[in-house]
Length: 322
Length: 222
Image 1: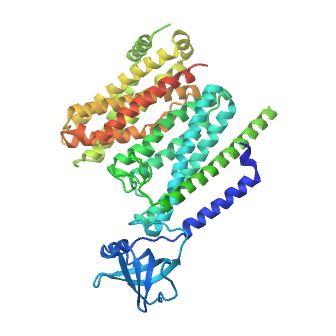
Image 2: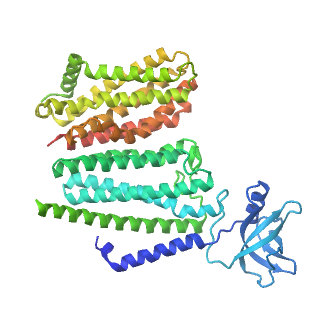
Image 3: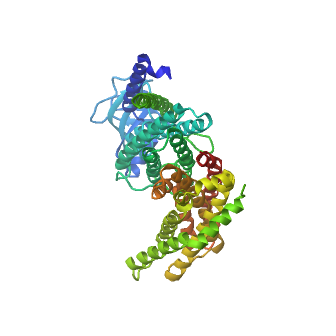
């Protein structure tokens, strides 16, 4: 497509990606006082970032609106970090607090941000690691869309016999492979810090491994074919279509039926795509998630277009040689 | 034009003359079982391990036997003849039914071997469910290896390629059957506890048979 060749598009995409990365890392994470109390009581973490609206300030503590307290108000005492005296009632504060079980109160540890434009929710058990949801999950979603593109191009090749569809199928599958690999790498890093090891054969890890194998086999088959052009393209298209029959099973069915550390495993409801059609993700994170999906999809389409053009030129060169 | 029964009859006759496919598969099974028995003397084998062994043996046994269905036609130079005498649909159905028969024979002999050699550990608690998942697994493996064998025979006549192409594609099926086999070895009411596995097996089989039926003609015609 022409649009992927314009410099303006590439500049916009690059800047948008930079903004996406910046926002994904810089947006503060803020939970509720309830989260902070629960995480401390369960011994998960002592200090938790909390987002709340300031109601009033006095010399040793501040009063916040929150659903945790009986009266809908929570008092936080000044810690070693400082006082609330410079903030006004009505300010929204994101701050680290520590719950003190003995007196059922909260101590201020640090003020992170005042009146933030956007905050991400505190995901239980993930904390700061939850930011990877804006990279790992959109990448795997784009990988699926890429394989879908590849299969549609393969079907179009079989119908229309136009070699350009064969090139596009190859380019789309290569892009899908790239995004699957990226999802694997980001997921592996996430697993290291969430579950302790880079790789532990969780059902979803097994299925993404097999997914990589399927498309590795596809590229191997392509490189081994020594037949005439149409036959080669037909064989590759057929394998691509057959391989895609397995993809939904690997990505959506098997990991959901078996017990898994990933959300959505073993009959639990997945946070974004599930059968009931509801999302279990807070709006700010979900908006950012869909922005990531669209941006990564644009990157995929750009890579696909670039690779298709390279393949076109290679074929033209080969024609001129012989 | 020959019907699919004709193609099936031809393949069965060729097989009865040489008995290449069946004997290769039986040898493969015996060697697999011998290696397992040699490496685990006197050990108690868990159902999860036995079901994995069973499906490894079945998968690679199928690859040994079923890979030949089209490669041998190309090797003997009979593919052109077959193309003249029968249309793509008959060839596909005939070969699929032949492969399914071979696969079922392989599966049943594998189960008999396992029953005989692993007498102590290989106790099937739910026979109907066991046979059902065995048959569903056989259908899926037969469908995928039929179309991929045709594809490889057209590509470069390298039969060794089949496992590499087929294993990742068949993996959802192998995962589900392995799990279903384990459950039939463990509980006497396996259909209820392996419901998810059976749903995967049935939908995978239907999807694969339909897709390979539609795509076969694309590979077969010149």
